[in-house]
Image 1 (cartoon, helix red, strand yellow):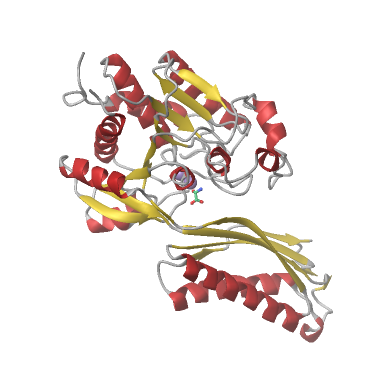
Image 2 (cartoon, protein in one colour; image 1 turned 180 degrees about the horizontal axis):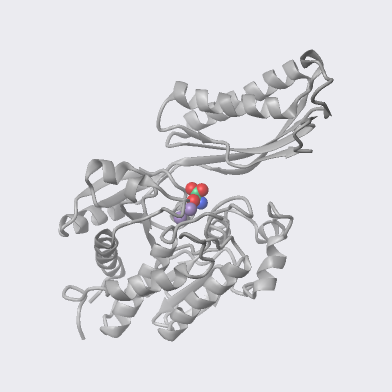
Amino acid sequence: MTTGSEIRVSFPRLRARLDALAEIGALDGGGCARLACSDADRVGRDLVVTWMRDLGTRVEIDVIGNVIATWPPDHFDPPVMMGSHIDTVATGGIYDGCLGVLAGIEVLETVIANGIETQHPIAVAFFTDEEGSRFHPDMLGSLVYAGGLAVEEALATVGVDGAVLGEELQRIGYAGSAPCPGRPPHAYVELHIEQGPVLEASGATIGAVTGVQGISWIEVTVTGQSNHAGTTPMTMRHDAAYVAASIAVFVRKLTEEMGAPLVGTVGRVALHPNLVNVVAARATFTIDLRHTDDTLLSEAEERVRSHCDTIAAAEGVDVSIRSLARFEPVAFANDIVDLVEEIARGSDGVVMRLPSGAGHDAQMLARVCPAGMVFVPSVRGISHNPAEHTDDVDLARGADVFFALVLRLAGAT
Ligand code: HGY
Ligand code: MN
Ligand code: MN
């Protein structure tokens, strides 16, 4: 029987799995498109589940399509759970989420191949619809797993394309039977690319993630009056596109006034009838606001709503607002953050503490168990973009740190 100290994960095996998964939903020129519960997501899920089953793990699929592989297969105590997601945005990279799931599989394979015994079982999960691009909110599967959203409500979610989540899970064969909320793990840890510029700018190569900032997604619908672009005097217009643009500019100005870490994004916009010579009758668009401080995030939300009311009155249009997601900032378990930092200091890396700008499944699991994350740098801070990249040396170091973290949390003997 061997312990974990002299054993290391196999980066070539991890690299090969990253590349194999990247071929599913591959975009011309690089990157991936595997929107939640799409056909490409199904093929990606099938591949990862095959890897999980080939290891001899116990594979369970729950009612919202989350998939959890546990080792040893006949142990039912709360596991140290690794995880993330394998769904992507429509113009995604190949590392966001996939690194965490495939590094988890690599950890399991290394544990099993070397007969490493642990006090707690070890599991790796991928959660449904982490991106939230097709079905809002983001981190939907892990939110249901953690008891933050009722299963029935989640399954009834209608996507931006009109599809119903529960029907899509049935269609792709991942409407499982394991109940949600799931049993709280002993601990939850996630290896993830930073998706931002902080590590690279600081010269750090490992992030000991302290928590995740708060997230507010709203959908704004402006209802004005379509009219002739040539004959309608400016004083007689009720132009939905103009109001949408005014609100988008306000969001940018607000982030400049309130300052970092507040960020604001108008990511999705639809005009109706969306024609060159017709004043827009309707504009539907989203606003993504994030901040590490929940009070300031609420202030930003309030100021956006107030501007909507002001500009709507001035232009004589109606504005309705629907919340798509609202998650408070989360702090990770101090002892896990400390442990990440301690292990990283023993590596050849440079470690720094930082909060996560992106949302993660760990943000949801932190509601039910001690959680933490390990970051590796993103080249030029780019993500949610086919150009997303992390150098192999950084991926390999992150996987080594992650492996040591899991063995410590699982009580390798
Ligand atoms: O929106 C996010 O931060 C994550 O990528 N779902
Ligand atoms: Mn992610
Ligand atoms: Mn993402």
